[in-house]
Image (cartoon, rainbow, N blue to C red; front, side, top):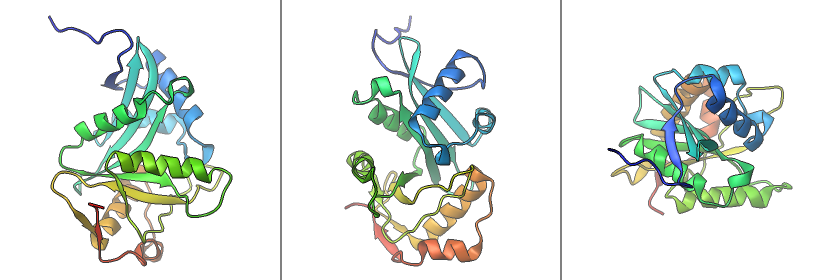
Length: 217
């Protein structure tokens, strides 16, 4: 007989039904954790639940949803996008985000993981929070792709914030090329946002990127 998780342990599972208490709880935390300019609608998120190129993971403690991750896996490139990661306000500071991140890594095989993260390049009222978020991913092994001026497409009424791209390299990878990043951004636009990025906009995003970026530092 398989022993279940002990009381208080985070149990991580794939969300498979876009209705019911688990989905409702997940979506409530999703809205709480993310600004409106970065959030897809409930209907858009529900449609991702059964897509073969998406995984929505939820972390539960004592049957209560406390954290989540939304993951897009490209079927054309050895790349996955961590589209969203968040925890309930009541559970922050307990390491659940790091546990969810490791669960994501367990599900991408040898793929590299791309992370859209709020940029701290410009002065803003929440600059310190943005810096801490990037440090969180760096501690888990992700590295910023320097020179990329990434622009997330508009998905709502508000303009999206300025973002940077970070990459968790994947098994055996020590660097990433400008050509790879260009192809990955194009795949993210098509697969995650159902958009075609204009060639001139794509070129501007990677224009200042070196031909190769070391991901070991």
